[in-house]
Image 1 (cartoon, rainbow, N blue to C red):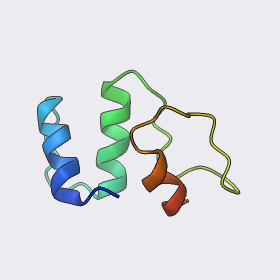
Image 2: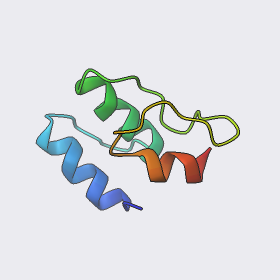
Image 3: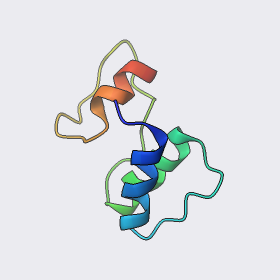
Length: 63
């Protein structure tokens, strides 16, 4: 799992100012910036169709 500092570094590299965003909000912003579904933390019953998502492990643990 990535910590908030690591997520902020990725966001910064994508031109996103994380400011005071929570980790979940920041990851969704990164997903949108990459042209992906901004679905972090919304998987139900451990089901996710985004097999190649960078955030999959964190997402399933959060959902």
